[in-house]
Image (cartoon, rainbow, N blue to C red; front, side, top):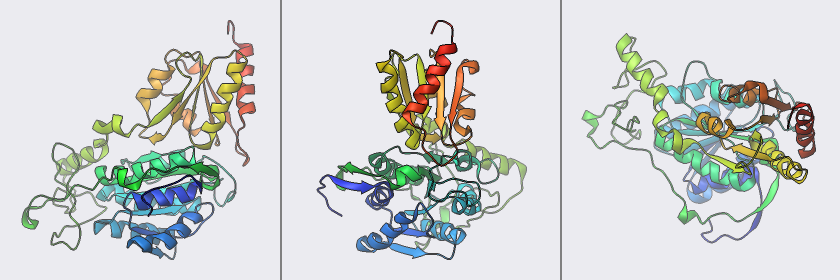
Length: 385
């Protein structure tokens, strides 16, 4: 890859692929599906140039399984999909969470359910990114609103996966994935690249699920002399399946809470004009762009609006939401679904009566003008606003 980069016109899906390679990803497996296919195409062309491997599997299930197998050998691995493909990956995403296998899953959202609208934008996979696989489990989900953010957050996703041994979801949407913007990307030599923690003990002393004070166990690469058992069953520190209650509780408690101490590091967000705002928008992905312009429109009219753009969707940035909504008269959540993010925001706003959704599910974007119109409507009916 070039070490000195100039301005370029880059598509979101291409930026995601380029970032993965720059972050050290050397394996991709998946199956083409709109609107994520450009990621597979880019990886097929460019991974071999840096010594990486690309393989198109027979389906999305096989693609996810191959990624986990590659990750177990010590390779940074990624896959990408959309719509029904993300649904098909859920069982193996759960396996990755239980066995603590680092991996990145890019989901370029499209309309659903089922086949839905393959070429239409949507943001309806918010809850699936968190709860798509059964059982409680740790997961991180990041969502960019621009091409540059796609690059930056993909690097973060790879690093988070390796550091915390969790599946990380890159929650793009069709608009961000397919739009092109002028960007100047950072020099790859300046990027932070996190490597997973590997064992400092001999193979005979190694326990694959014995965690130190960090809460994250060291992970030995398959093929390096360390033999360990990988399973989706509840297991002990040696990796052996167990149903012993105290061992299961100890293991699952660590698994479910291991991200808690890193909440501040994982929580990524941006703010725009929030300091004096009486009206706050909370948005992510492409809709955050419309909300930012709605802030400008409303401020020209004398309505003090502001934006909290969530880049980390999961774990949900509850502390940020609580802090930034505590003195706001109104909170609006624009999103391309029936209210998935609003339901989560509702848990943390001080006055739920002043929380409003702005939703669209017909395959079209929510425009800044539509957001502004909804604010005017609410403001008109609010006494003293």
